[in-house]
Structure formats: structure tokens, C-alpha cells
Length: 366
Image (cartoon, rainbow, N blue to C red; front, side, top):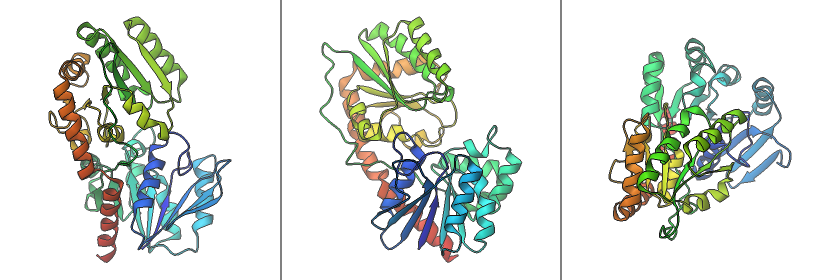
């Protein structure tokens, strides 16, 4: 098959920093079988070539500082070229224009979250209309698949899901961090936005300190709203807890980040379609605590390979699970060991690419 992947307009592929969607595009494309050719069209940025090749994958980068300008340049670039499948990542609004130029080509919308099919980004009616031009809608979890079917019943027959993966060579266990005489380090990684639940984690950390005095919270991630980061810093000061804000951490440095902690926590407060950071932490051999939310329970099996928090609005509920890991090293070690085994079995990028290929091949033959 000749597969075209249209990336969002914000960040180049591969991303220089952040850009989880662009990272997923790059990893999946690289792992798609060499019997297929893959072309990625992505945002151009200075210091990036306009075209580069990576084995059977070609990346073409075009200018465009707005979605409209970017899409116009994408369409100019791809027009007249033959493709068997066109995959549009996280931008259902691009579908009508692409379908107009490629009326007979299979078009797939790969959604990494519900953001771009929901207010304030769009209305349900507009998203529903845009998705009419798609032959397939792929979510990154069973939870997101079910959400899409319920939200857009007219499209339910064309909705599928594919779990994301992790680089098992990059993210792997290292020597376990010793805690004797050192702080117990809780890690968080993600965008600094309200729905990620950082205030809940901070309040949980304050509670944990009563049982584990030498606890420390380390937060990796950036924000488009500096005022929110200032709010988080003020909250940390008012709670009298030691918090380190690392800012953006490059993907190459994330393995070191996971290795620096004793526990990883994902306290998401709203629908978390998949939760890639959980898989990375688990692959890195660090015990993980996360909200029983969205696609996260598809990754974490409570008390087997991690700990889930059902009442994820509650700092006390998170504190209880963190204290379990801090005070019971054998339980922590068992969870981390099983987590690594489960990630190897279920969440490699090769497994993601294989399932996506199969979906496209089956749909093409129908």
C-alpha cells in the first residue's frame, strides 16, 4: 500500500520537543512493514529539511502558520500523487478538502484524543459533518472508540482502535533508585493544564509527607499558559511541599527522567484517551499510580502491574496508593516487574503498526 499521513500543523515530524502526536506518527510510520511505502506531510520549521527519507518513509515538510494556510500547502503538495490510504491525524476538519481531491481514496482519521471533535475546538454537528468524508475513524484506545461510537452513532460502523506503543530499547529498567537517606521522588510528566490533575497530586503529596517525610515531587512538562504554572508554584508554596518544575524535557532525556524517580503518578481528571506516559513509565520499570479514567485501565491492571485510583478527584485516594509504594518496596518491585513484562507483550510500536496495517488492508479489500 501507498500510505500518506497528514500531520497536524503545529509541530514538525519528528518533533524537536514535546509533540506526542507527531512522535506517534513518526514511530508508527517507521514500524510499518517495508512492503508499504509511507509519506508523511508535516509542518516545516527552520533547521528542518523540506524533504527527508528514513528507509521506506519519506517526510515532506510544508510551511503554514495557521491551519488554513498549512492545509492549502499540503493539498498543493499531494495533489496528483496516487495513494491507497490517506491518514489524517487529529484534524477531522481537514477531511472535506482532502476528500474533494481524492474522492476514491480510503481516508482514515486517527484521533489521539477527543479534543478536536468537541467544544471549544468545534461543535458536535460540525465534527459529525466533517467525519462523513472519512472511511475509517481510528482511536488510540477502546475507551476512545466507545466514546466516538456513542458521540457519532452515524459513523459507528467505521470506528476502530489501535493502542499506542513505546520504544522498548529507549525506555527500559535501570538500577533501582535507592531511597535510604534520600527523598522518595514522585514523578509527573505531561502538559501543565487543569485536566491533568496536578493540584490533586500536590495535595496528595502533602498528605504523603505525614507518613513519608522525605518526599519530593518532580514535574516535567510545559504550558502555553504561564499564569497556570505560576498558580501551581503558589499552590506548592502554600502546601509547604518540595516541588521541582523541570519544564519541557526532551524525548531523549525522558528515560533519565523516569529513572530519577521512585513512583510515577498520572492523576488525569478528564477523559485520558490513552496515556502514553504511563506506558513509558511502566516500560522504564517504575511503579505507576494513575486515574481509573478513559483508556488508562486498558494499560494498568490494578494491583498487578500498577495501581489505579477510582476516586481520582480525591488527593487522599492518590496518597493512599503512593504510600503503599513508598512503604512496601517488595510490592513496588513486583508491580514494576510485571509492568515491564506487560508492555513488552502488548505495547510496542511494532504491534501498533501491525494492527493499523491490518485495519487498512481489511478495509481496502471490503
